[in-house]
Image 1 (tube, rainbow, N blue to C red):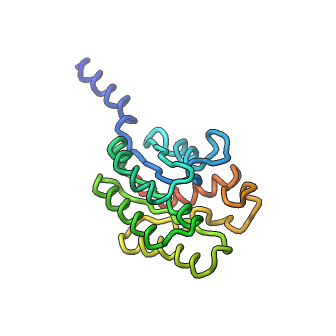
Image 2 (cartoon, rainbow, N blue to C red):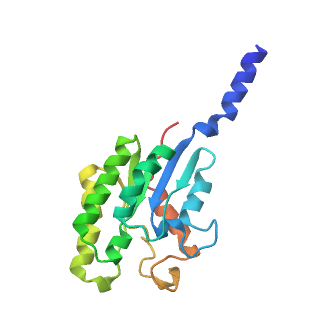
Image 3 (spheres, rainbow, N blue to C red):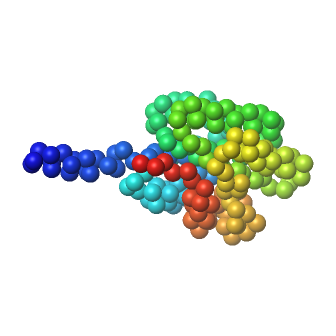
Amino acid sequence: MRALFRLLVLCVLAAPASAGTVLVFGDSLSAGYGLSRGQGWVDLLARDLAPRHRVINASVSGETTAGGLSRLPQVLTRHTPDVVVLELGGNDGLRGLPVETMYANLEKMVALSRAAGAKVLLVGIGLPPNYGQPYVAKFRAAYDELARKHRLAYVPLLIQGFETNLAYFQADSIHPTAQAQPIMLRNVRAQLPLPVR
């Protein structure tokens, strides 16, 4: 009986180790560019979900969808996530790369994630209006189409709620400030398809 009790205690203590894993796979908006350690929305998400779920931030500042596609297989193998938060494409847009290529890369990453057994949350990005209305509209529509086609959990715009308020952006007018991170967290958290454990 005593041995059984010890086994039950060990199972309870080991519960966090079997918690779901959320992989955030993005660019500087998720890597916390220009912020102090622990201020980024991904850090806030990790604290919000602990200890039931663990959050891995595999985001890289400056990452394009092509770079993400080349990195993703190894990251999936290493972390075996239950959920992949896919937040890429902004650097493709800022470089004026073909939207069709960005779409294809994102679609392949969705397929890779699902093949690895993970649910996918697609996070959309916007571009400044100076890139021209036709390109900006096509860029935004690519996320909408991808989410619709593959029935993905979806955040249409990571910076929804403050996108036109420069007070929430750093001096480059691209990267959100620490003040904006809780809003970004709420946008993602509302659509996050957490695993049931």
